[in-house]
Image 1: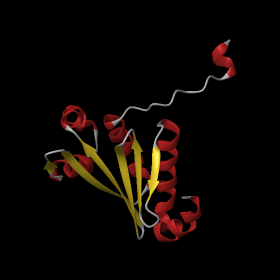
Image 2 (image 1 turned 45 degrees about the horizontal axis):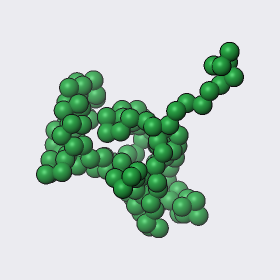
Image 3 (image 1 turned 30 degrees about the vertical axis):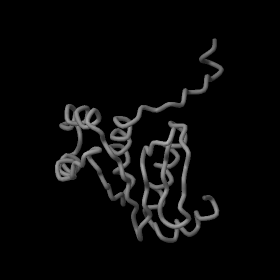
Length: 137
């Protein structure tokens, strides 16, 4: 995938920074397989299940996050803690037989905090923090 980064940067433009930060977060917090289609789609998977899919567009990227029934209930219990923009977006997303499909367009870095919280509902981080020397004293 790294050979495509220059092409991705040219397409994303200003959205490259939030893209890199989101990928960095996923890579440090989760143990995931990355499946890149060579064009505009990156799937983050573990154990045959897709965690998120990222679609590259001109000037932005789209994060696809699918909540099953359990995640929907968990999100709805704390939905009031999210911005009005996210609440409205969530309510407008269609629910299918396999869950609520949320295609979230990302243009700005400021969107990442809420998206990361939403990803935590889907899947808690799996990587353990490395012990620092002062932790073992």
